[in-house]
Amino acid sequence: MAIRLDQPKKLNPLFNRISSIKEVLIASYNAGKGGPNQVSGNEREIFIRKYLEASYPKPYRFSSGYIIDKSGSTSGQLDIIAEKINSISFPAESSSDERLHLAEMVSAVISVKSNIMAQWSQLVHEISQLDPLHSEPHGHLNIAVRKGKIPFFAVAYSGAQNTQNLLRKLQSLPSDSCLQALIVLDSNIFATHEQDGTWGVSQTDSAFLYFICELHMELTRSLIIGDNMWQYACNVD
Image (tube, rainbow, N blue to C red):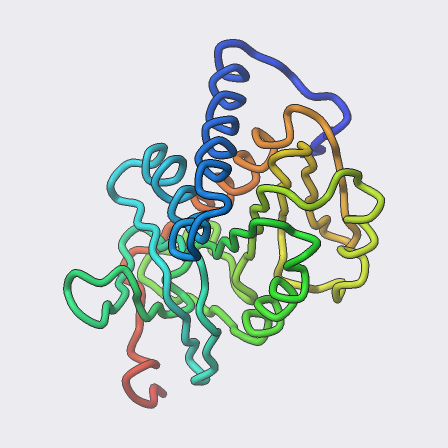
């Protein structure tokens, strides 16, 4: 399937609805700016509550925490972790949103930033922690299962006004980086990591819809029934 970012469609009412959702996200973020850290640092919560949890049915769970793989490698703290359907994760206690996740049980990770350029070093650090983790799912039924690195997405409310500066940042990343797609909401910039390691970048008012399409494809691409997690508990021959 060839995706033409330079040929956006504007199918109403879908396009109007998605555009309105984006404006609500930006407005909610702006409402918290200038306040204490606990107020202005609510970008992740806004994106979870006002888009992800509102859009996806209950079988999908979005939380924060960190990830471990079968080798024992762990990520640092991550903003949003999208769990696979039929998965398991481990909260520190029953009411906690902070969870320990197994690599094979994760569909995607999403980082949320206020300003992508000002916080670029934070994003690079998150990539460096997530890149070494390896997912190797095994189950009784595996459909279109992704193996290898865990897909990483980034959402920024602001920070890049043109594609050139952002593209230079993206091209400085390793060609096999786990970062799969990025959206800058206020300037309508969307970037996607192509299979050959290059970046496709577009600045259009369809950018948020592009990002949703990319993320949704990742969240729904695979199905595992009877996922085997014994290698986390003991040696398996």
